[in-house]
Image 1: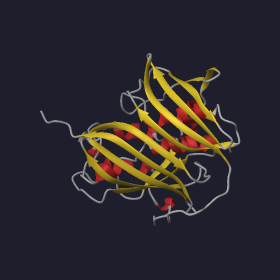
Image 2: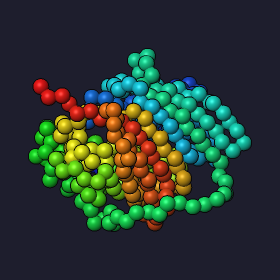
Image 3: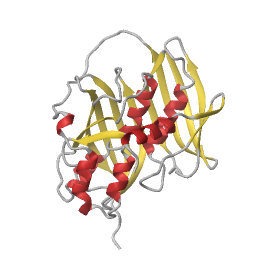
Length: 295
């Protein structure tokens, strides 16, 4: 099994897209836990592609995206960037990710030059210090008996090795059959230092943001998720707003909740705070969440 450092290097290589034309980039995929490309990966790569066409003095402040088809982890993904607008303060880009001749993902992103203005934020919720919480390698084996496949534990640990992600409370697969408040908190940071490029930190947070956001939907119903086999699902859309500078290699608190689930869909919304209490990111995602039919 690769080390955390090796896994982070692999992830950084994954985000370092190959430029094949002025506004066309190509990316590959890493091993998938399920037979499709991880949504956080394609969103992060699309944002990398958009950012590569934007002046260096403009930072990403929002993205809005739709997952159109399941990506094939065995095939390259081509990202085509459309330069929608270059204004005096804002730059807008649209990115279409294509595999096998079909669009699999669509992203619109906006970038802004630095400005001063009105300032306020929601207070950071209370949470225990991340250093007091178990790592994934310590926590996941405790729940091995709940997974439908005993190999899931090792695959989860390896898939998340680039990121140190720590649950504040038990994850959905740890409390199957015990509905509770639809709220979940995790701390995360990369397992190693990153370069100072702000786009890299934004793209890394985008990658991680798709890992746990819909957990709060499952918690409300005592469901454990795909690894337990009591739901099937996939991300439908994903939106993020980047409010303040942050580093993805320093601890970030991901405070998540679900206000609604209906019609085979579940909604998650979240705020991401730096460890010193600054609101860095707001995230909203909707996903398909269905209960498998018996028999």
